[in-house]
Length: 343
Image 1: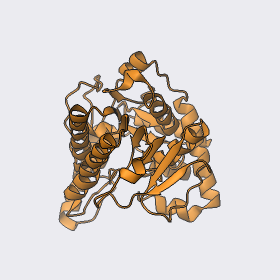
Image 2: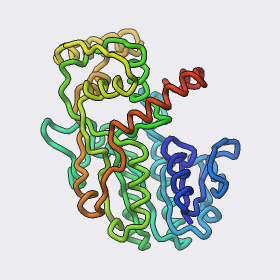
Image 3: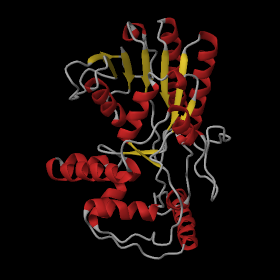
């Protein structure tokens, strides 16, 4: 029996469906009973409540061999909550540690933890890649909480013998995606010219079904126990190339203006100044500009060599599926699509 936490999320819903359809016995841990999800009938559902509260995991873990831990307070752009640090700590660290302790006490063999590339930082130096032994230097509260959770889980593993596997994905995309990738879909769909023609960075991305495939592999593989793996599609692109790839999948033309990166950085600094003087959130500020210009590349050779994994889907196939979902949502549920833009 597999227990999947965060089963109602972007990754979790896809994972539960694919695991169940491949013959696994799956129990989906949900935050509240009202969540309407089209899981296969074979999927058990258990309501564990809000991770901000102390969770009694023992009933949920009865008969479970493996836990896939996806539930988390995710990265929120423009986090403004005064209690953000505490919320990330309680949900991402304390709750994860409590789950691991309960899993070990319940006889669970393995816990697969989906962490984040943000434990390493926000960008890789030009021409370099992040490997599993690269120094971790998270720059925001989300990255710090994910790294603290990794450390807590390794501590539980050492004390109890619980097998832990850590996966570090970069940005994950696919049907149901939100945040920055979703916003790129909207911009390309609207045909808005973008000032990205001279951007030559490299970005690692991960299609959700490729991530699900890796999770399906590491829940059983003896070689995965006690390991950390970086996961990506293995097709690093610049932001400009990504926009062109989305446009091809959407069968739309897109104009990428040849704006020098130095001018974009200057625009970001002007946006910072306006924000500091007015309190208004500017679309072009330094953090947003750096997300467009910085590189973030991950080496997945360990996953490929140690476990023999190859992505079953290309980035082109993943983007086509993502665009198909976007078009369906646009025509069938435009109001849901509009609300999704704010993450």
